[in-house]
Amino acid sequence: MRRRITVAIIATAVAAIVLAGLGTILLSRIEARRITEDRLRTDSAQLAMGVAEAVEQGAALSRRVDEPNIGRGVLRAVSSALGFDEIEILVARPDGTTVDPLPDGTTTADLANAINGGRPVVRTTDGVTRAVAAAPIGSGPFAVVILRQTVESGLGPVTRWFLVAALMTVVIGAVVGIRLGRTLTRPVDRIRRTTGELAGGNLQARVSSGDELRSDELGELARSVNTLADSLERSRGLEQQFLLSVSHDLRTPLTSIRGFAEALTDGTALNDPEMSERAGRTILAQARRLERLVRDLLELARLDSRQFSLEPRTTDLGHLVRTTVAGFAPDADRADLDLEVVVEPGPPMLAEVDPDRLAQAVANLVENATKFASGQVVVEVSRSGPDPSPSVTVSVSDDGPGIAEEDLPHVFERLYVAKREPVRSESGSGLGLAIVRQLAVAMGGRVEATGAELGGARLAMVFPLIPWRSTTEAESRP
Image (cartoon, rainbow, N blue to C red; front, side, top):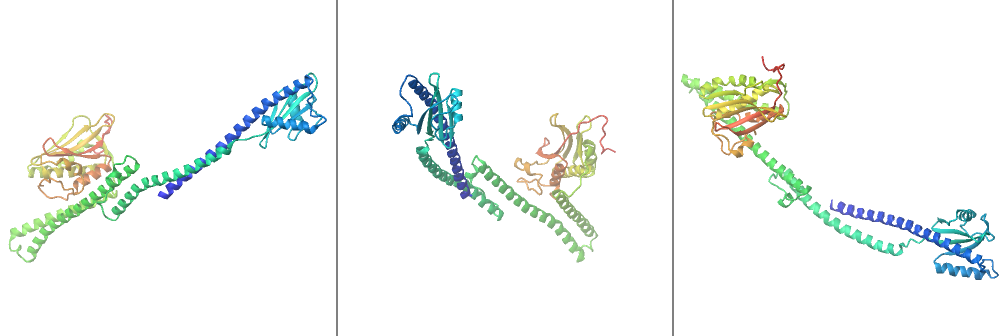
């Protein structure tokens, strides 16, 4: 990666230099051609007027002299002094014809245009600019001046400096590319090594704090990797905790069943009717406990894999909660608990949920509350949220020992063991609240865990509220 970054920067610098060089050469040639054409246009017009005035005043100026070599020598001296490659002076008739032949590159049409147009004709061909200017000699022929000049772009010295600058740019680009490559690849290499350690099973590996504190994308990547590592480490801890809890919940009833089964086998319990009855009740209770644990595990597995069906429909949550909680009344009486249902007055509170699944979630919340309550459990159905997005909340509160503040965000995790774990009145599978969260989320809701006004915990499910209309009837009602 470092090599690719360096090569890319150098290639970019070279490409920029080439483009800049080509652009400079092109613009220089265009500008040099414009300057040369403007100069020849002005000078040819002035020379033509000067020649015409001299002839008209009677000066003996003509190419057709007795010593033509001397005439051409004079013209060469004049052209050299003025900086032209060549100067030709002719006498032309008004129709553009001349006595002397025209120089190479100049046509009769050029002379005719210069004479008839009244201004010089300038053309550049193959890097050579020619200007043809004509001025009348009195009322007779025309004095014609033809200038030729090679277009010089003046890039000789500039090219040398340009090459020096290009070489320096390439060197600087290489240095910058190497340093930038190292700056970018070093944290990437550290992050790669960290992810490799995580993949190898070392969940305590973390990206260094220096990379994590960066404010660019690499810092964001480092923070994401560390967050992922924290989640993986926590998931492994929860997995180990899950296995330990399930092992404990399996071992306890199996120990009881084994003990009483051995008593029945060796005949100890058979001779004592009271002990036989106790053995039967214990085996039955522990078998039911195992059955529930297995059922909850299978239910949670189905929820995790989304292999379960939902039949959502508009449901009156107040009616559903009353019906569900009523089934716990006998157990609450035997446990000397005050089980109360409070439904906010007003029109029915409707939500799009699966009534059977929601009843299952409510039952899990109530059952969890009865395990920790000292004497009171309150189930409440109320409206909440602003008018644009109202919601309905189903909450279960108890007057038990409550939940520590740091444990509240985790109570809906499967088999989570709180730092200040309250004593339960009876054992359960430890998966009920995890099932509640999975069901609530699957039905478009969310779960909440807070402290209760009764002094214990308040666990709730929140669902979007469907506005009530007088013609609407909840399908869950009989």
